[in-house]
Image (cartoon, rainbow, N blue to C red; front, top):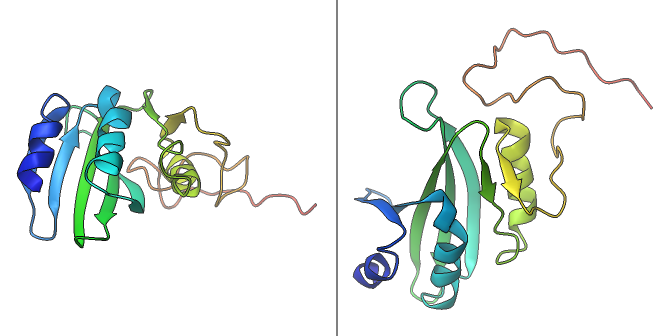
Length: 152
C-alpha cells in the first residue's frame, strides 16, 4: 500500500521517510488538501489521530512543521504527514475532510501561532484571548511573566 500511496502523492511529495514507528510523507503546503483527500478517499485513512507542530527555530529553512497522524482502521496502518510552513504563512484547514480537526487545529494555533486558512472558528482554545504569545514556540521564554485574566 505504501508504494501506491507514494505513487499517488508523487506530485505533492517533498520527501518520504521510512520511520521506526510509521512512514512519514513530507508534503508541499499548497498540496495538503489534495493529498489528505486522496488518503481519505482512495486509501481509506478515515481516522485523524492527531495534529501537532514542531518549531525548528533556526534549524530548518521553514520554521514550523505541521504534523498529522492518520490511520487506516481496516488495515491497521498509521502514517504521518508533515507540512513545512513559516511564521507568517497559513496552512489549509482540513476540517472539510475531518470534522475533528477543528479542535486540533485550534490547539496548534493557540500553542504555536500557526494559522489555518478556512478554519470555521480559529480562536484560542486553551488560553485566554489576551495571552501574550504562543507558549510552545522556542522563542517564548518560560520565565515570562504572564498577567492572569480578570475574573468575569
